[in-house]
Image (cartoon, rainbow, N blue to C red; front, side, top):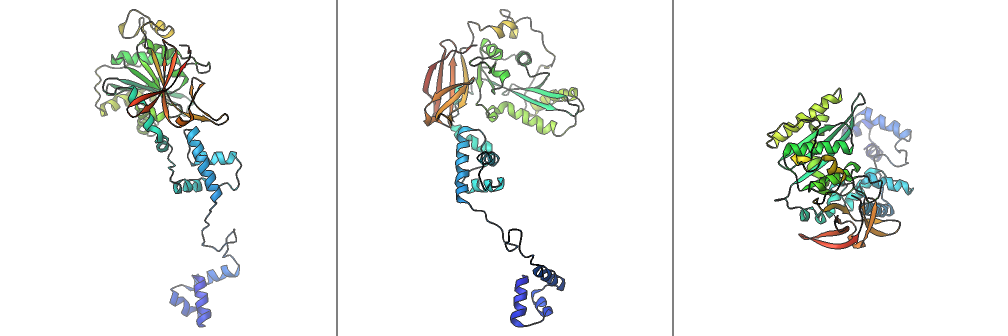
Length: 393
């Protein structure tokens, strides 16, 4: 605007006051910009004329962003703009763009920067519906909440149970150990008087077992099998597939943890119990028995079965136990050796490269020591590989 006023005065040889009245500007405005012009401050630090936005366009950089994004989608569960920027720093690329620029490029290329939505890209191959009959079978979902720290440095831990419309509980625990898990699990079964067909968990070592030793399941898996419960382990690093339990945790964080102040662990432990009662009332789940958090001392096995003790159920695989374990995995590509694989207890099982990015169900038969890998095809499971595998249980 100042340049237009100056040009008009020079062209028409009129007074400054006349030109300012025509352009509806004040004298203070005029002399402010005149002093700026005299000081040569109309240029920014780049040497560009002020007011011009910089359009950063680097087509080689766009191609590099697209390449990193596609590689992350195959090999990782996270491939947002922040992960892409980390990979670019590792490669020491120059110039290094901002995270905002990466998001703009992803949007132009038609990608979604939302991690969860993109992660569901291959969810049509997720085989859970072919493994479980939702009308006949019941699934108990388990998940840990925490650890969360209070101001007095006390650590808060919780264990979430979600059994459809039968019961949903968030129970405080002292330690994240297998013994604590087994005791709370047995309390829950005794409370509901219902043994589910399946137990669904993530791949935490407390659920899965001693993953430090290859091909070995833990005591919790052995307990489930002896109770004729089939364990299901969701894909690694993708907790949203355990949504039955994760939804309870998210509601607790939203309604309680972020809205209230707790001075000690005892207060929040009681709040977990109160939250479970209120949550079930809101979902109209009828609970006729009072569930206490005190550890029950089981002299016999679960649900009044006098034949075996709890110690026998966790340490020995019984003859009439369930005979399969299900591990759902996403097929990944090994960057160094260039082959497709899934990981089962730190043991890689090689698969054809055409299945990269798809979800498969690895079903282990305990009796025959055979691992069968299935791919969902329509409403059926297609056997793509079968391998002899000895796993300690």
